[in-house]
Image (cartoon, rainbow over all chains, first blue to last red; front, side, top):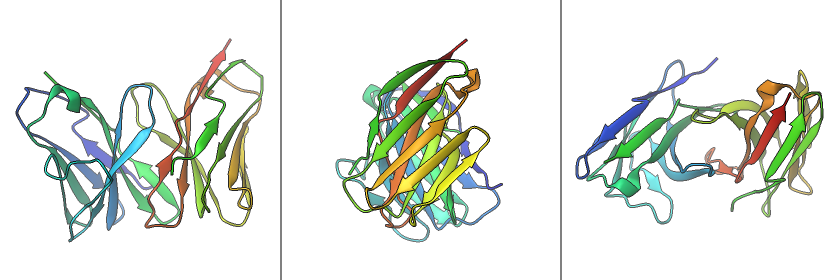
Length: 113
Length: 110
């Protein structure tokens, strides 16, 4: 079946640095991918919709300059957390939809110290 | 708008049944059900499309009443492996974007 691969699975970074998370659709093309954020014991909150070849669409309250999204090809979307702070620590998950089913990446546990 | 899931949590003994509900205040195109284990990404269970269908595999099934904008997930003869948080994701037909409920924590004890 279709697979979405997310990398890295865990990352620890210092406050003020930037972190890039990659999301790849391995055996299907995804013109649209989604980035979610999940706090412990909470639901998945949609951050933005990543559109291949055009600008991402951000949900209300999500800072565009803080969470940079690039969708340069039909199989790759990246999320860059810029100038990370401890409050950005969270579980970030991407997803992509093959017609009829949404697949999630493995998730990235980001810890900012 | 975020769909409403109920109950928030349920504790079962192995072999018991459970029902998890998901309701929305807006018209739905489809409902997706996922199970998430602690520290892992959600795992797809099933999708129900507009048309009021019912699906199932093994001892997990679900129904979708589009008129009531509700879906229910049925877990029968629960197994220890069923433990986790169950999320419903609703799709209003807008570019595949899913909005998730707050989740239902299911604990199955021996």
